[in-house]
Image (cartoon, rainbow, N blue to C red; front, side, top):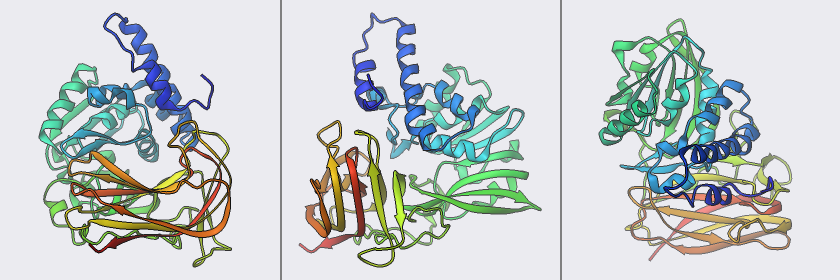
Length: 407
């Protein structure tokens, strides 16, 4: 298959037709090919350059950390549900966080996980010891058995409230938090060694930014990195959030793309930005817009934002935006077309439908396009996705709005 063949197609060929007659070595070779392609297209191509991290991502069998039914999707760059309202982090996010703390041989790393064990496995070959706290009991027990079966002897697993850390084994040289607190829990600050690094997605439940900290003179000194989206933590700290989502009044944050506080060329509030440009002149509304450009059919070219949305209280929404596009060509699959999309998820984060504004075909100058979309009654969350979505060409978007439609 050529370089443009999408990963899910390759997965179908390599994984979808497993039989008991196939030797274990043949299966492992096929999974190794998927891992190599995953790293090349979704991790290395997106700026991860630490050779040790890249090698760990090529080595750890991600398919072992998802449900058996999801193994054909294991090497997509996507979060995959693993049960109990939790997901396994996308490969790029795992690699990004790992590179940020730069784990070294001889170091001890604390990882606060949601239950898959995958991040701990990636860390295993990069440091001396990994202490992982899984927040959901059932998933924690499964992760412990899995890590033991796969031979990750330097990974030590416990089940509990990760915000309390693991004081018996502190201090830690590095800490990774793969859940989203409102602020860094004090026990983790206390348990980080002087000079150590900590990476954590901070913010509101659906609006988080990676922060990378270093402990200096007993205090955390940090910087903001890219926007992201993580599932909420369990425990008292999560329950006591000062600002909680309002699922009866869903709204997009920074839908006009005006805000880029850390001036990294990415609009704040939107995560998983791929092949985007934050343009600060010539906007049809305000001072900025986002441009998407892609030349390779099937390649990711998008940005996402999550939000709470209760289908029992919101029967319909209107999704709209100002768009301008030219030279549009189809992607490799029928669904790979430029559009504004809202995806709906139920209480355990299963996809239960979507609504599409588009697809955008041909070319046009700035035009407002929108559509009223029925919300499934079982919806509890939503993700808005905008971009070329695997198509080729040039797309500009501004003033994206999501409004509740009264019954």
